[in-house]
Length: 126
Image (tube, rainbow, N blue to C red; front, side, top):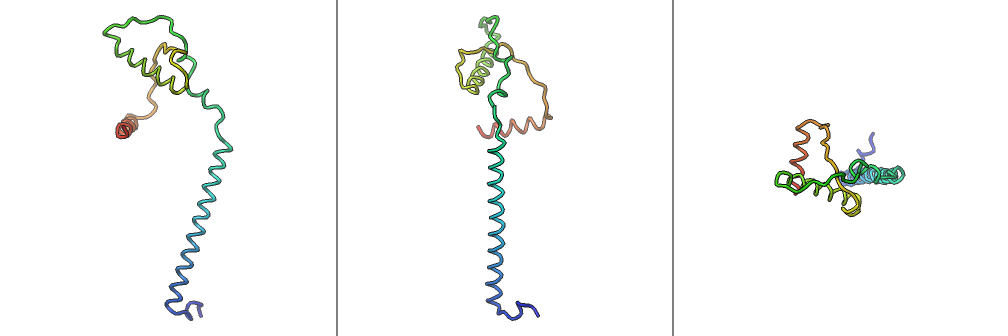
């Protein structure tokens, strides 16, 4: 004979709701414990020096020869100005402290579809 056979329908309903609430409380308690333990691990194993990885020293070398402004290299100068401003913003310094001497493209690590997807997502955010 089962314990629930002696209960009425209303008692069974209340008992089932109590068991459901107890199960949900256990699940959310475990999730909260996991969230706090992950936060603690993030604090313990936090990366120490993030500034060293940001900009290689080759980029920060001074300019050897200044390029005269002509109609052909105006786009290149605009690109250099943008890159210089981005490096200065990342470093938190002034653009007077360094010059971008050269720009070398990096080899593409991902396939073309991944790059196109990232560019599409970035254009949607702007």
